[in-house]
Each structure stands twice: as C-alpha cells, then as structure tokens.
Image (cartoon, rainbow, N blue to C red; front, side, top):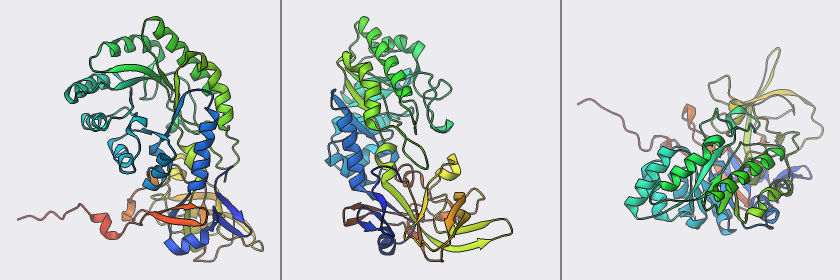
Length: 421
C-alpha cells in the first residue's frame, strides 16, 4: 500500500484514515474510489520540505486525478498545478486555484485553449514545437498578453516503467531534441508577444531511481548556461515529475533523495525550480472498492467476478500493471489460493489481477484495489455503457461524496435519436 498511503489495516478492518472501507462501501455502494486527503496533503508537504533550500513551485499534475475535491484540497494548501487541457484549467478555476501558479503543458494546445489560459492569467506555457509557439504568439497578440514561456527539451533519455509512459526519448512526440534546443530557443525569442524565460523537461513516469533525474538536471543546467552566454534570460527550470510509488514490491525514491540528486546541479543557477509530481502525491492515497459477485471455477482456473472492470481501472489491462488487492475485512481462517480477479466487461482483457493469491470470498463481500489514486478514475470510461464510479474523499473520521455515481440517464445525456422525416 506504500508509505503514508492512508490505506491500512486497523485490526481486521482495512481503513482509509480512520474509516473502515466496509463502512464506505455500505454507504456509497460499489464500484467507488476512496481517497485519503490526509495522505495527499502529507505527500505534497513532503515535496515542499525537500525543495525548501531553493526557490520552487510544486505543480501537481492534474491529469493524474482531477477530482474537484482533490484539486481543492491541494489548492487550499498552496500548490501550483500542471495542466494539459482547457478542461483541466476549467476545473482549477472552479476550485479557486491561483492562475499564476498554473503551468500549461502538452503538445496539442488549441487556439481556444491558449485564449482561455491567457485570459485567465496563468503563470507559464510549456512550449513543445515552433508551430505551437507561433500560434501562441498570434493568440497572445490578439488577446493583448505576453505570456512567460518554457521550452520543453527532449533529452533522449529513457525512463519509466513502461514504454507508454516513457516520454524523454526522441522516438516520442514530446519536446525539442537537445541538439536543436539553442537554435529553437533563438527562434522562440524572436517571436513577438512571448517571454521565453524557462526550460522544461519531463522524462517519464513511475521512475524508481534518482540517477535519471540527476542526469536530466545536469543537462538542463548546462543548456541554461549556454543560453545565458548568448544573452537569454533563464529564470525558471522545470524538471517535470515521474517519481514512482510502491504498487507491489518496488522501492521508490523518497522526495529527499530526489532533492539531493537534483539540487546540486541547479543551485548555482539562481533559478526557481518547478516540479510536476502527480502519481507520487495521490497514487498510494486511493483505493477502488468493489463487490464480489460470484466465484467461478473451471478445471484450471479460479475466477473472482467483481462489479468493477477495466472501464473503472484500465491500468492492469493497458499496462499489465500490478495493484495489490485486499479484503476490506480480514478473515484469518480462510485459505488463500490463486485467482483471477475479473470484471463484467465483455473483453478477455477485462481483469484487475491474474493468478493472485487471494482468500475465499463470499458473494457480497468487498475487496479493495490499492494504490489506485493515480490514473484510476481519470482514465475510466463508459465502455459497455457502464456508469462511472463514485468518488469519496476521507479526512480522519469524516468522509464526503465528491463525485456521485453516474446514472443510466447520465450515459445518454447530450445524445439524440436521429429520425428520418
């Protein structure tokens, strides 16, 4: 479940903070995501402490978990935010996040999204190509703004636990190759209505060692010195996110280790350091609750059929990801045997775990899929016309529904039946 997750056994009951998950499942039904606000804030504050020796801004990666309750909790704590869409900006404005603490990343920003962000007064754009910079310059001229801009560098450095989440190689769509960076920055600086003053790099996700971060910090620092030698102002350096969490038996680095790796590389630059943690803030703080529907056996397999499927949590099917699965109430006398935990989706790829040692379950009992706070609900869908899960935020003994479960009527809202005249 990971250090400081907020999800832990208290006696025989698996709890989120001080609330038994069985109590939450009974109150809100299943499937339901539950998040520990306590754990989220503890993780955010740990990043703040680690980076305290230098000027910095911790920008939570909204794509990881964009529930308004989570965003509001972090906004009230003073967090900055990393966004990749106009919809994410809209969510932040709804919870009162400070626009000047928002950074807009992503390779495919539209003119409408740029306009929305400029008029909101966000702090910075991360630019990933010259055509994007040219469009931003034109929109800035139209709206009368001169936004601060960071050029995203692609260091051709492979990192991350799966090739889908490794973003720092030149085979991927992200950023400008290091060898082209100085020339592109010159052209960026020549565009009107932009204030290029920063460098950005993000190399992947679920990274379990700090050497990659040290290497990229050194690369960005060297580039900053080179650009300064040409007379360009570099005020900020953004090293992205990507620190991993424990899903099974991993040993992810602590934020102090990350800081010890990168701060010596950038300290003498006198810049503000930006980071964009997401998974490492919310991943271990969440769990997906599901109800056991049936236990099915064949000659070769034992299946636990539950009411949560790949539409609720796609990571096992998409990435082969491992999530610990635990009974919400331990039954010490029950023997564990291998089982596939599968959902109701009409796909062979609909599973939450395969060949996992699990105890016997009686239909109607609940289990928890742990470390599901990151990229769980955020990547969920209505596949098979299934309503998306509820979301609940917990703090101590208090809990609140922060997203109601969708209804069947919600599924068809906005649709119409075309009829020939």
